[in-house]
Length: 420
Image 1 (cartoon, rainbow, N blue to C red):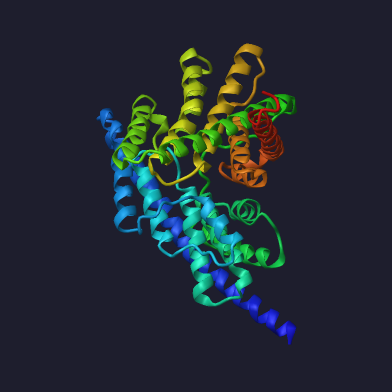
Image 2 (cartoon, helix red, strand yellow):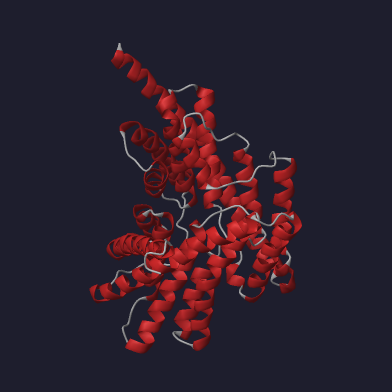
């Protein structure tokens, strides 16, 4: 009798996971395609009249403000924290309106230049699909986390054309545990995502090809990872501080427009900060191939490393939708480029810049989301032959994560007055 109950429950779980996967794949694919199209379209049009960059983020975030107030029950989107609260409390659930809320708000944030990405919007929206399915389909109460993770797996898999990335993100960052039922639900989602990606011939995020790496670069990869840990801490603390600061501003007009105008000002002088900034990575790599080294290039990369986390934090503080996912990847790539060209110029190291861009992206992302395996498989999947960098990306991801943890514990220790 007990075996029969288990069999019935697991059959329901597989069926429910498949339904959630189908819906999540559709959501992620349409959001990814629409955002990429309109982000490029608006950027190209506004580039002809650059002063419009000043007001674009205000337009997007103002629309989001009114949608939240009048359409989405006046509730703020709190990102991945919403998922954790739902998983940790059996009585909690992600309401169905979170699906269109994060979908629309994430789309509007990025296409109007908000300096973040659609990844976190997709994660919460697909998690809400899983949570809603859990209530509607009637699977066992214990399977709520499983269906949430199925949705997240499918969503991330489609965004990066990498089912294994979706799988590890769901296990490592969302569930933070592994058991049979979670593996079943995530496995179903990963398999369906793989089938869908194969059917539509999904392509990596970047088109540049990786040609291998040299072992003499290992000490420099380690140096990059250590710096990336510091940058990730700077990034996450910027988000926390700026969101907290803006949360104390009672005047909605001031809160929305101060943050948005500052983002617009940043984009006016540094167009690479527009939206998710993924397009800036291959553009800068091409520029480095031509220039190799110049003071203007060094200062450009330095400013982008400093400003991308701030622009993302201001976007979120003003009311935009998103998180640290895309900004972490982009900031890390800029950091890797800067480290490589400085070492090549001053120490004649002959480092491969694109390799350092990808290792830097993995390192900052890993430390920012506390997900080294997610960062490893994501970065190895976003460029052709990316797995040729498996070892340095693995090193960078774990070293940056633990460097950031040590730095965070030190700063907390100092803040408590024990080292002050």
